[in-house]
Amino acid sequence: MKYNKELDYCTKFPDKILGVNYNYGCYLHDRHYRNQRKYRFTRKNADKLLRDVVYKKFKNKNMKITGFIWSRIMYIGVRLLAKKYWVK
Image 1: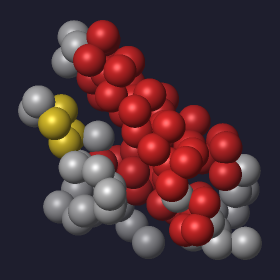
Image 2 (image 1 turned 180 degrees about the horizontal axis):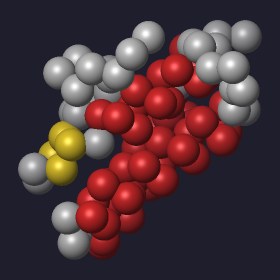
Image 3 (image 1 turned 120 degrees about the horizontal axis):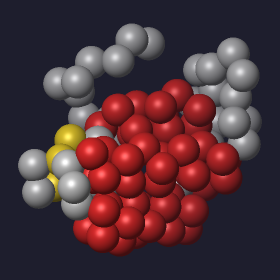
């Protein structure tokens, strides 16, 4: 599956907020959740990857505090609610 910036990869979250588009992080996260990677991360590491990419996108826009908060909200959300989407 090739990345397409026009697709909605952040199913339960918006793909962008405050002008920051972080759907590439959601794309990477989805690939690990669906077992579509040659070297697959654990579920926890896939969730950390999402958190880190979201934070980096905000940091690149000089919005570090907002990025820190939002990336942690997303991380907690996927840790608590996304287990059923993990393909074994």
